[in-house]
Image (cartoon, rainbow over all chains, first blue to last red; front, top):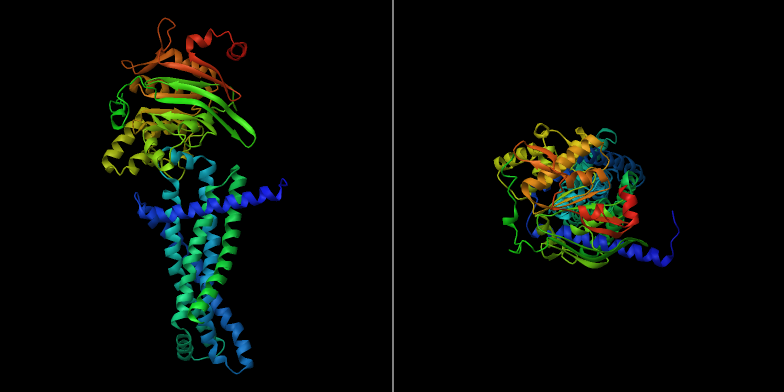
Length: 259
Length: 281
């Protein structure tokens, strides 16, 4: 890798942020003007949402299982094993459900978007689309952005639900807890603010996954090697952004709702 | 022959009524990538109905010039007018409208690999939300023009390089554009397939009289275009009798980013320029 001066490096980073911001803004704004590619949005919803269900269900379920198993050990020291339901529900809904789902979808879809758009870029298909009078951002980025934001919201709800169910299975089968008591405690532990917090996060994560994936795809350079690099960068950057934004949203929500 | 394709789509464009007005005016454009100047002070015009062959060694900036004319990239200086519109300073959203009157054949075909041949050719018509029946009829017609109507259900990966190039031509001409840009349509193809592609360009030129720019670095393709015509009666491409030359075909020779020659076929072959003489020999 060639060495560049700090000034050039800083300018390159600033230019990237500018390009990313412009792309994101155009992708969002395109839905409010014609033409709208609704069929492409539904196709992406199917690909991103329905296609990701198996990994989200498996991840959520086993996260709930292991959470119940691990927390029971600590709670036992205080004689509070019966509170396993509270802990699992709160952890899943507020934190693990949104974050893990975001990371899983990032691994599956940010990489998919970057490689698909990157391949189109290096084979001049994006230029061909422009030459045919179609705005590639409107046709390719906007449907992916809205589909990801919309579907990640519901995938997170699903992850939360199966996570709590996984916790219930472990609590009943391995810890000997009463199922009714587990679900009752889980339900009582959750407050309105917790649910709002848990369901706000996927909106940000979905935006990050699609915008970062598409940004790296649309800016791919250098043939197949470039496509590989864009794919890796998309997953790394979107995953890190999801965790950073998770912290910011958590802090903001605690500030607003007090928990 | 396909009568619909034989009609020019110029009626759909808000073009100046004076057909003598140049379709493309390139005025003193220069562009540099990183520190390397790719094109320097290029100027030329393309008149209505003219076929301009852009000739020159590989790596001379011909494809960049084609992308500049279509507004896909912007020049560092100078201006480019297409149908009277300054594409070098237009907003992208306005360029999309203008480009619906321009057909472009890319060097590597640039077909959408996730779409079938039929959907690739129909792409522009689907964008315009035309009825499916009309779309199908026009797709079959365009594919028949390039003699590939039996590939409609296939995917680009199932076709040979020459077939992909022909599908790309069908995609470019289906909307009956007023200007066609061929970026090295014979690049990387064997001589027989190249001749097939050049025949299609000649057929399109002589049937529709559409203004076109053709990039090539192969002299034989350039002179094939200049010395042949499409016979509508026999439906075949033939040499112009009496060693004739097509009047509407002109040359622009570019070397290392600079215009070396701009003129007719006659002027090109009689040019005293030593570099040109050596290049043509």
